[in-house]
Structures are given as C-alpha cells and as structure tokens.
Image 1 (cartoon, rainbow, N blue to C red):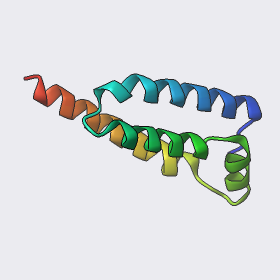
Image 2: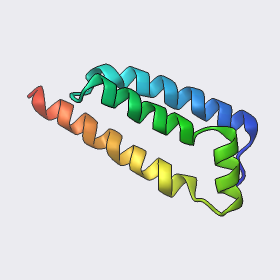
Image 3: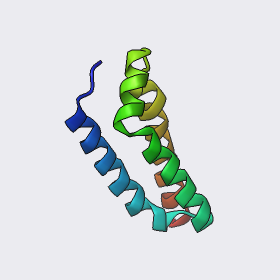
Length: 83
C-alpha cells in the first residue's frame, strides 16, 4: 500500500478534527487527552508514515483497527450511560 503526501495531509487533518470533536466527551484528564492527541498526530506525519511504509508497516492493522475498536468502545460506553 502506498500513501501519497496529499493522502497523509488529508489523514492528519481529518484525524486531528475527529480527535478535537471527541475530546470534550472524554472522561479522562485534559492534559492526558492533549498528550494522547499529540502522540497520534505525531504518528501521522509524512516522514513517519513514509518510513514505516518502506518497512512494510500495515497502517490498517496498526492504526485503523485499534482506532475503530477504540471509537466503537467509546460510543458504546457513552450510549450505555445515557440509558
């Protein structure tokens, strides 16, 4: 799988926006949230992604699947507390 610079930029911007949207819904401390967001965004920069790509890194498995699982668990927890 090859990821272009425009794909990386779009991915970074979209994930950044999503993280900022869900941040206010989080139960954890604000400083902890900021640190987590920074770590995720640091992983989504052009140099990091291209280097990992050259090493055979599987983006979907390493980032996509955990992000999907985390989002699903987060939403389920929020929906369960509102019942």
